[in-house]
Amino acid sequence: GAVVSQHPSRVICKSGTSVKIECRSLDFQATTMFWYRQFPKKSLMLMATSNEGSKATYEQGVEKDKFLINHASLTLSTLTVTSAHPEDSSFYICSARDNGGGTEAFFGQGTRLTVV
Amino acid sequence: KQEVTQIPAALSVPEGENLVLNCSFTDSAIYNLQWFRQDPGKGLTSLLLIQSSQREQTSGRLNASLDKSSGRSTLYIAASQPGDSATYLCAVWKLTNQAGTALIFGKGTTLSVSS
Image: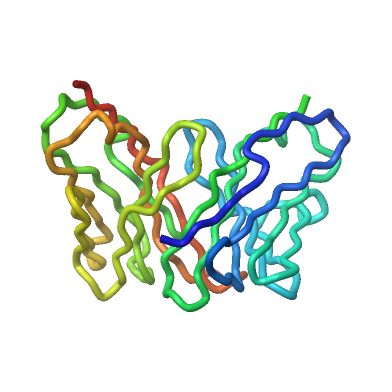
């Protein structure tokens, strides 16, 4: 199956700093990638849809100025958590769909962010 | 608003048992349904994708069914093994106003298979 690589897998940062998470589709092109956040024992919450070459579309309640998304190429999307606070600590997962392969979604390994 | 519910939330079985995980969704206007596996602290592994026009998909010991009219899907695991222990997530592709389509997830069923 298609591979989505997410980096880093874990990051610890200080309050007030920014953290960038990368999501790459390794063997396929993805016009659209998705960013999710997962709280403990909760379902994945869709944060935003990343669109190659255009602005991301955010779900209701997600601060676009805090969670900056850039999708500069067909294989890379980045999520930057700006001015991180402890409440931003969470598990972030990206997903991508193969442009040529229907609607099956493939997920990255996730990033555990801890803000101290 | 599409809501996805999974029952049970947790399940413990001895090795070798056949088991069924349930998923229901409130809006039958879905594109596809997908079952995932998530190991603790890890990302998601796609198990089965059922197109909206299909009724079931099979992969090895896994069989997933879809009944759009009743808003239900089941994941059947045959001859369970300790390595099947994980959280199983059901998700439906839903048309959204903002971005076209997106996956809406249930909270998952955490399965524990003892040897």
